[in-house]
Amino acid sequence: MANEKNVSKAVISRLPRYYRTLRELADQGTGRISSKELAEQMDLTASQIRQDLSCFGGFGQQGYGYSVDKLIVELERILGVAGSQRAILLGVGNLGRALLRNFDFSYCGVRPIAAFDTAPSVIGSDFRGIQVHALHELEEFCERERPDIAVLCVPADKAQSAAERLVRDGIRGIWNFSNVSLKEDVLGVPVQDVHFSDSLMTLCYRMKDTDPFEFGE
Image (cartoon, rainbow, N blue to C red; front, side):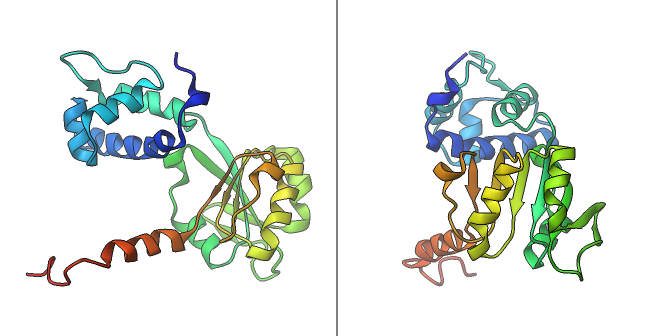
């Protein structure tokens, strides 16, 4: 087995794309696929795919390619989504509500078990079976239920202190939507910052030199 601790961030960032593409292929009834065919699906090269997957072991077979189902199982193991990570959400504003109502956490092997807020108007509410608790109940809840992940949807100026509080309560990873980068080295747990503005500005950059009629009729 390869030493996964030495895998580059660039390779890790492509793993969810592999997983998503393979899940789509499985849904379409594809049983096996070559690195060349998978590369065409993902706009990568076959050598890049073979190199990426070799970081975690040998999953392909010469002359056969990859078993789609088996590779999905391996990626679930590598990504850590094979089990059911238990999650809580802090901050049930517009974004927090949208995530609770619409995001398929189960696709990523995550199961929300509670949400927390300070607003009396939302405490006691229920979103797809997820109850909103008062924030002062956080420590007691974490001690009792031992959640793994926190989804952070609090204002930017509250994010770092909220994250530190969560880590003290035993949270092992943070999905951060607060629009500020958290100090992972201070927290001591993995953090994934989500900046919607980054992807929108990337789109704007790619559009700069695009002919406005290029995609027209």
